[in-house]
Structure formats: structure tokens, C-alpha cells
Image (cartoon, rainbow, N blue to C red):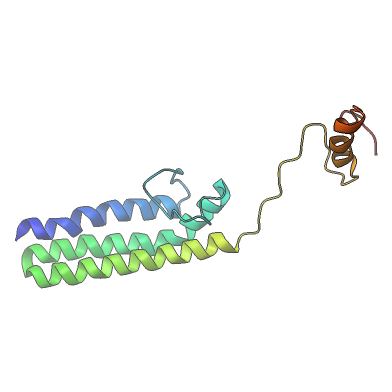
Length: 144
């Protein structure tokens, strides 16, 4: 019976740590922890924002897991199971909030090619076309 109560206690501790690290923006991008959806993994900023938004509910889910595990040691299996289900539900809800926050971020502008100053003059695009046709290299030309 005690082993069953230790499951939410241990898992809740891990989930709580991930939630707090995400909330404090100290959770590194990794393969296992945090909000890991296509929207949150598209950039470092999206991952940070998703986990900051998901951090408080995920930390609360960890607390629920730890509390249900501790209460389950004294009260029994029913309390442990209810607490574990509650922990999972809160963690999933936090993850969905983080995913939606990452989805709401605008796309980051693409990185400019070398030599381009971002002035939208069209010179970089023209240089790419001209390089294949006449061999001209205008990418290094400075000026407005």
C-alpha cells in the first residue's frame, strides 16, 4: 500500500520542479521536460514563453501529487488515486495553456543572408538571380 502512495509523491515532485523552473524561465530546452509541442519547439523564445505560462499550473499539479501521496500514506488507496488523477488533469491543462501561448506568438523573421542590411531594397534577391545568369555579385555592395 505504501508503494502505491509513493508514485504520486515522486512523480509530483518531478512535475513540481519542472513547473517552477518553467515559471522562472530557467528550464532549458531538452528532450524530456516541459511543454514540448510543435508550436513550443519552433524557437527558443516559444519554448520559454510556453513553459512560463504553463509553469504555475504545472507546479500546482506537482503540489497536488505530493499532497495526495502524503495523504495516501495515511488515508489509503482512494485518496492516492483521486490525487493522481487530479495531478495529471492539472498538468495537462497547464500544458495546453502553454501550447496556446506558443501558438499565439508571431513567427520570427527569417535570418538575413550575409551582406544584406535588411533594407528591403530587393538587391539581395536580385543578386541571387543574377549570380546564376551573369555572374554578378552585388551582395557586398554597400549603399542605400
